[in-house]
Length: 173
Image (cartoon, rainbow, N blue to C red; front, side, top):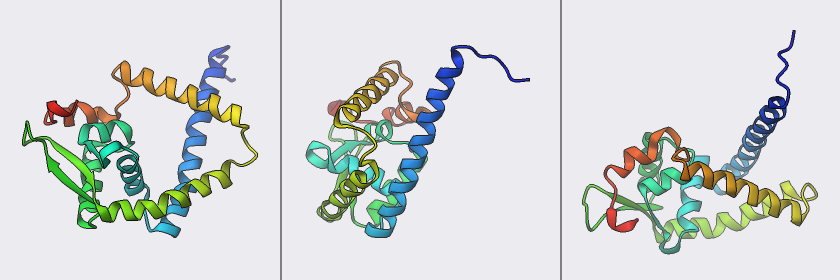
């Protein structure tokens, strides 16, 4: 006998569909990025945030808040990117324990090639699915949800922000 959830059934379905769509899109995009640009999902997730940020640098806590990585996963990913010459860490001038992840010239060159490929792939995958108006509405809804989670203190995975903020640069806020 199935549990009757009434209106809650629709909410569970909505959240489930969001997770399924996100997982499917991540899988499709990560496969192409790996094949065409030799970028794995975690690397691209970090690099695209740095590439799209003015100054091409973010505090580690900001990077954690914007990604799906745990603190240790983020540290390992930045370590690998640093080893490949695409990212460097810079100390915070006010607090030497805090650090920024900074995109290098090599990292920018990689992303200058990868981003247009990724945009073309996004267009290919989404073509004919959403109208421009639907895409704008979806973007607004997702932004509203993300902002609510951040403002309520729930927007950072696995307490990543709390752990990394403990050593972050107060000047960069």
